[in-house]
Length: 277
Ligand SMILES: Cc1cc2nc3c(=O)[nH]c(=O)nc-3n(C[C@H](O)[C@H](O)[C@H](O)COP(=O)(O)O)c2cc1C
Image (tube, rainbow, N blue to C red):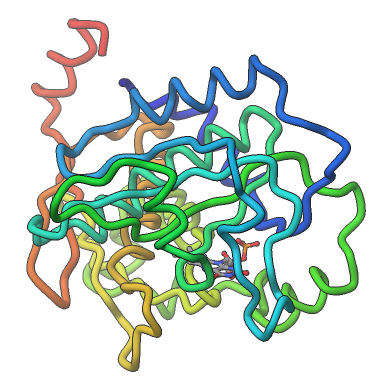
């Protein structure tokens, strides 16, 4: 599937985690069909996939303390699955998961990535997993309640969800005055990415022929890989680059680097344009 860059770039601006859903608004069949389609079609890596589940969503989410902090009344969820034999499985799952979430946002739906606080055994009982496959994260999906509940507001404040680290603290490599025009919008989109507990573990090494994403922060992972967060930022970066007319491809790298977005040369870009891609 070709990424709908402009649609997803707009969705990056709109997306916010919502944890409490309106139990009176079910998902209409058209929305379910559109979600199912993007789950099946946005699968650029053979070892990472997503699956829409419309049963038992309430039993999948658990609270942070007791039922506190729990995702509530979601009519459906999407499981993000990776094959653990793949050394880059975490970033691939982050990348595809965020694509599905941006499409859900573009469809007018609300979501919340959940990495630690869900019950993998219940998810596994609802979907078929192959030998080395694991559910690395899920997202709730549905229509959020019109107003945030006090519990949701507190969770947002607790995670300082609206704060983002400044680009000047995230970027290294080429000095800013030498950045080509497309770099700033890409880093702006990447730094807006969601991450577990809003920890924003990514950094960006700007080079003449692309941008390398790396894990910038030290410290424990708390059950959710920082490389998964970095995969989410990778998708945001690529979406913004393409929306600025810059195309390229990812080369996965060993830790603490994650992957390099290598921009295509003018001749490759021309060939792509001529072939209508
Ligand atoms: C991989 C991942 C795991 C997350 N896990 C949880 C979770 O278990 N519970 C929760 O309430 N929020 C979870 N979040 C949501 C983050 O807290 C949220 O994305 C972050 O605070 C930024 O806020 P925003 O999404 O509104 O921009 C997770 C986000 C990501 C990306």
